[in-house]
Image (cartoon, rainbow, N blue to C red; front, side, top):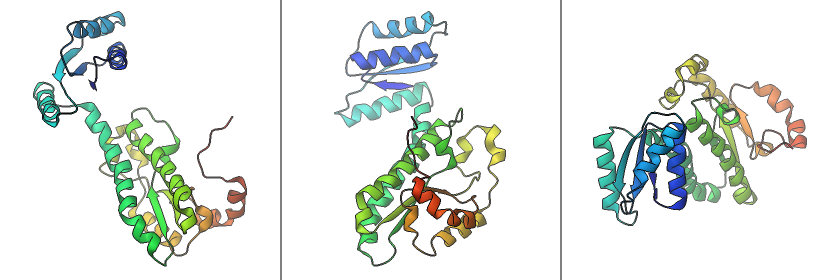
Length: 240
């Protein structure tokens, strides 16, 4: 785990928390060396009964790109990997990728005279908390909310945006979830294609900002339109 700004008040607390939680490798990103910090981190691990972690000091000035690159090279040389880089990859694909697509194509979509429909790819994983799958499931949660925001921001311009669980298939990204869940990933590409074609055959404004799954019974979903709209269902909300 790499924590930049580790010598500041918040950063110092964060690195100690990771040490107490049992992190085996802790990188301290500092603008200047702090003599006592390595000892503080190791002491925090010992106090919680964990083995002494490998603590690596990296001099990083976030205003100097070269220092960031040098720190990355040092960490790769000494550790060989950085868990958070794998974790963050899901955010780059699922969130940043979805945002980039929206930013690039929404202006064109809004100018056209067609149905102006944007379907964001989410997952049923957005609605559950599975041990070991947080990097994937949190991104899919965010995608659902992103679709809701698209309706808030562009609904008055005729946009229809909703999120969809495309299928449970063993894609490259899905391979990162715990192996004991792989047997659940048994949907077919044909199911995805047919459902997309059905939903895209006409503009269904009542789906605005909602979540849909391709594995649902589509005739039943269509039959429950009035109920779903009246309850404002298939959206995130906090239940009190």
